[in-house]
Image 1 (cartoon, rainbow, N blue to C red):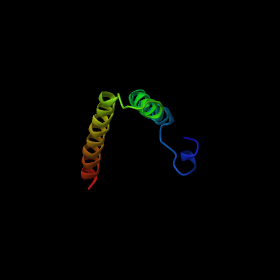
Image 2 (tube, one colour; image 1 turned 60 degrees about the horizontal axis):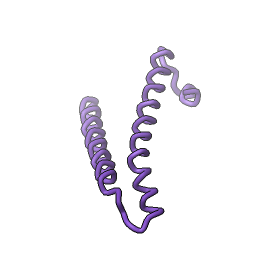
Image 3 (cartoon, rainbow, N blue to C red; image 1 turned 90 degrees about the horizontal axis):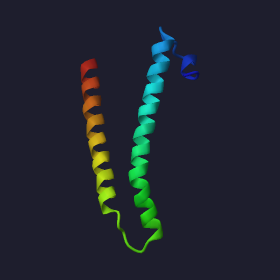
Image 4 (cartoon, rainbow, N blue to C red; image 1 turned 180 degrees about the vertical axis):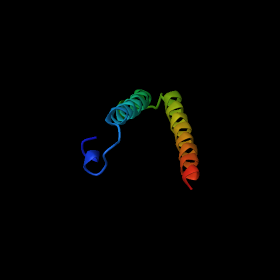
Length: 83
């Protein structure tokens, strides 16, 4: 936020700071969920002769697909509204 204040000064710092903190927490929590699912898959693949984490891998890939579709839809709506 300090680096963005060089070129951009928000009209109201309170909501700007809270919004950035909220976004950071959301991204951090999504990363923690993905890490918990994929971390086991990585460990299993690194230290075993067989792959026993097909379920968590499928869940992680589905999660990635759902998030990707959600981002694409939201960005198209946001960019379409500005045109």
